[in-house]
Image (cartoon, rainbow, N blue to C red; front, side, top):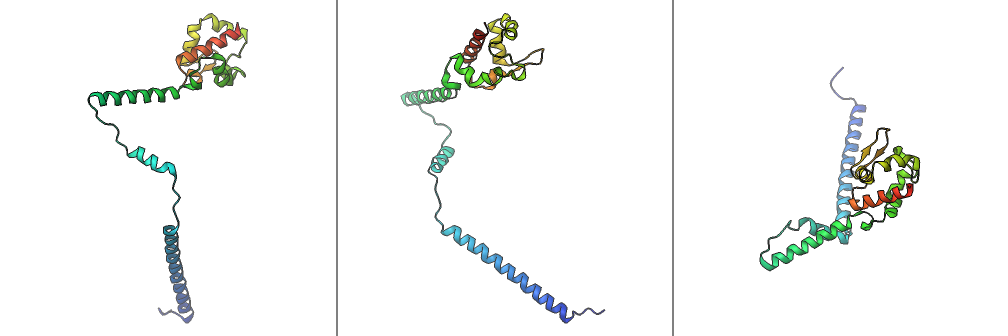
Length: 177
């Protein structure tokens, strides 16, 4: 065999080279076309974007002295208190029934994870005998009983305050008496 290409091979190479060159040109045309369309289409602006950017690049703090500093510190404390109040579960209500209806019923209606059902005096009796403080402690910190039942801390909602937990426990206990 000789090292020269036959007419058939030369024809294939010419056709293949033209195909590759054509695909390269097509690729470049598509890239340039997409770039042109992207540059000439109006951009949709989200009204919140400017606000979010301003919040991200805002200074972390400032130094104030004298009356200006006291006023700024008081305003910051009030804003922090409002933010903290908005994070409290169920609007901060201490109505035990409201808290039960919104959170506790999930487990205490069906007996999930061994939870004693609402109003079941047989299951609640030994627990009530331990005292309300023990029940509140178990509800606040979480508890795993010897019989395998489990109470997640704050019923699984860390936004509940101690007063809300106590109110919910008291309401549940009252239903079992």
